[in-house]
Length: 194
Image (tube, rainbow, N blue to C red; front, side, top):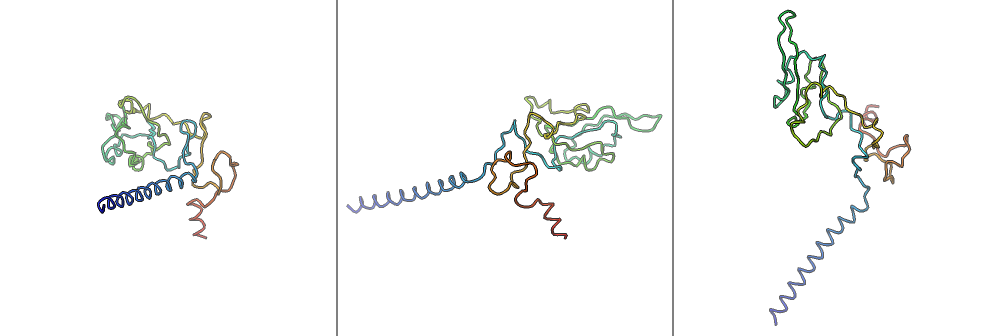
């Protein structure tokens, strides 16, 4: 009889503990149900990227002097610079320039250290392909400027979600000049300097 009562007691403890764990899980679920949605309907809506976003590299062929600084500062020696020395002008002549974005880590060193500013970061991040060899961009492909999210008529650009006014869930319902809740980091710095 005692063995049976012990088994019933153990079963009851386990059932109570299981109910406690289920309650904890449901409390997290219900907590998330009360929050604002933070998803973006991706192909039709895109967040406006910050100006310091490190996207695909843009290359200006005419500005490049083939100094190969970008290759030396790259952690993986990625840019391929093909040049020939012109004996008459005693300068390097750039023949070909390419970057493989399948290998690139988008660190931005090449852009930062380029002496002629022929490299720049764009806000293009949609580089997916079915063949990895298509990610090897030559100087022609690197010279194309990307289409900005704000200029694309097929896409609704979204402001960031963190600064929506209190009670606002959908950023599309807000008028363009509406005041945001909280301050941007730049505004906090400006207030601290005053």
